[in-house]
Image (cartoon, rainbow, N blue to C red):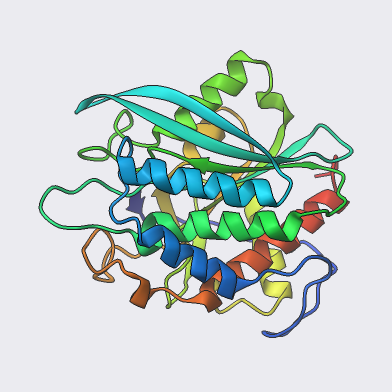
Length: 301
């Protein structure tokens, strides 16, 4: 992802959710400890750049976990033209049908950045988003809901070399094109992206390129749950997997703790020791509360 500062504003959306740091959300709960175990398991595969054998092994394990939840799991395989040549990539989509065909997508990437000069295992940048989505699938298991939910694990978020519009977000660009050509893009009511949300010092800023009403809904959910200290109204702008959706006219929001000066991002220090089950719990609860709000208000903005 790429970053710059930019301004934004806030609107309050009323959500039926309790306050307080340790308040319990209604409906399904999110097990951050189990998500953290998934994060550690993914890291155990080592570096997982797009097209690599370790990433394929991690994908097979994730698919097996998703199938245990009863989700309809699809592999969206494609080939990407990159600065290193053609690389095979695969998005994984876990579907939880609702009573409506309208879709809310929760997404994140599961690949790691390719580095030639050091070993990068991407505990936060890659594993945290995939781990959160796996636990979210368990929380949604057997749940009744109006909207259809898609949990999407993007391949190829990271640049193969240096971040550009053509060398980045391969999986999300591919999926937008596929959905548009198949006439399904209009079914996507909202897209919630999670990225780098396992950092033990969690700070999620309002991403300026995200859709305002959806950002408001997420931050209102976070504040209602007592998590205002982690979801900050100060702005930032980040290039990430939500951008192809926003550019295609789909409402999308990026939940990302991106601090390039923390000493961990894209370094060998992005390890399990710098991640926290509490951070995963907080973001997981906020996403679940947002889904409940969107489900209740489906068709209304």
